[in-house]
Length: 154
Image (cartoon, rainbow, N blue to C red; front, top):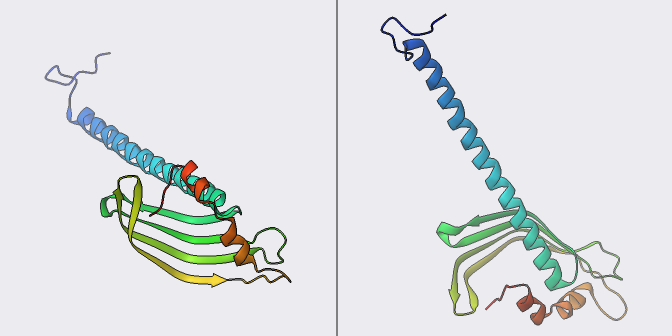
């Protein structure tokens, strides 16, 4: 059985319609896969930022959302929770709704932030006889550790 049209060619109106539907489905699938890849890449970067912040502070840090904007030289974080150091009653020491860092640039071996905005900051103060949880967090920040992870702040 021959499937060629009346003119002898395989490209009839029906086959062209099928080819266009197939091409549209392929383009749609490519767009969906690129979107899924970007979401996965964003999740990996968010986890890496959690690891770096946890290593710097010495306590567990949870970042709910990570939104880089390379074209605008800015980055945003949302739902940041910094745990209390060991030995304090409160689970969370600091909760920040969102952090927006704008005008990020590089000056030799330093990263320079033009504007940093914190929104909805809640501090849960844990007090012991000899210290508060914030004193332990501040004393736990190690500048050398920051340099070892590859991030330097100016």
